[in-house]
Length: 572
Image (cartoon, rainbow, N blue to C red; front, side, top):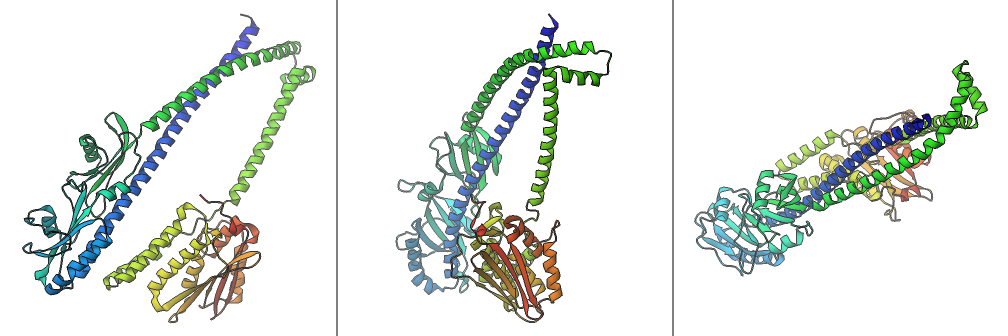
């Protein structure tokens, strides 16, 4: 084999082997990442869908519990005569409002004597040993759920029983029995597409089957559910792969098991692997052909270079390279191209680094305003105090406000939210503080005549300003009034937070205003944080203006360019 052939062989085989290895690694990495991503995405979808189904059932059973709570609240203050006269008609009203209720009946706790029922039902007999009656006697503070035998008319139904205390006469303490039609509800809120062999099952606390969307046997599925108990996992059932989701339905003791077929996912992954492997083999073959051609093109210039180098063997290597660069067009072009390439790479690298640095500096550095844990703890303490004081309605309002506050704070991870949501978030925060402070503070919102729908702002820009007013502006012994004003002009949207607290001296206002303009990394959650986030997103047109007067109060105004406030670049 000649030297020319040896050179061509070397230039062909080693790059081809290296390329084949890189392609193989890329194929392995790509298929691994793709498989994991598909599996993770499918896992999340199954979990989200199953969680939603579970939530639907928990909502449904919560409505059933609300019925029993309503009856308990009405029954506890009635005497024996009132029970006989008013409860049956009350039961009829409940049945008329809830089509899923089959019957409502009431039995004395001590001996099972029938006390009342709706007009369409019959009293039970010989029930003292049945689960619904015994368990209600034993668990006097909870609702008891039991399945009922299926019939020709009603395939799926269940019984809710509950012990009813009576504040007027303990002798009238009773057991409530409500029978529900479960079939229509379970068909309407069960998942409709679980794939081949997929099924939705409901078991009671003893793993007795209450409902199944699958007409075939479910013994194997029951065994898998008992092994998992709670959670989500991949299982094999009847020769197929499934995602099994098992969870307990709150307040019932029942369990749901959802089997979602995963065969299609694995088939898609296998098809992808086959396609990418074929593409890899094609790329390697093409690369080998190209390298054979390229090796032939490189061999001739290198032979010329070898001949030239033999002529200057006694000279220094650099000198030889310089002479050959000037005497051989191939080597000169190669050298010039390499030099140009390296210079270009250097320039591009510097440009990329500079661009990355500018991008890093321009990103949102301030994290979104985090919920002060003291605020959360104080709110929870306030809720507990209201409950202890018997002010359940106020506690409920505070819980609802806190729930909405957190939901709007999260905003599904978005930085830009509707202006209406930002105002709602501020209102919930003020409602919670109002329930805490009582007459020591009040607030009002002043909105423009012009509709505010269609405007978007960086989230959590009002709460820090309101919190500053409460923390720094509240006068001891005097009620604090906080005023939130939304207004427009031709160019700007204005958000004003005003209080009538202590206020600040003019020098302090000037100091705060100047500190807003200082460019540095800031990790606080106050006015500076809001200012930095506004400038990052809206540019130099956005601003915060502070006005204050001692013993009069403070005004902080947020200015946002109106046109930019009508853009939501984080919309789903």
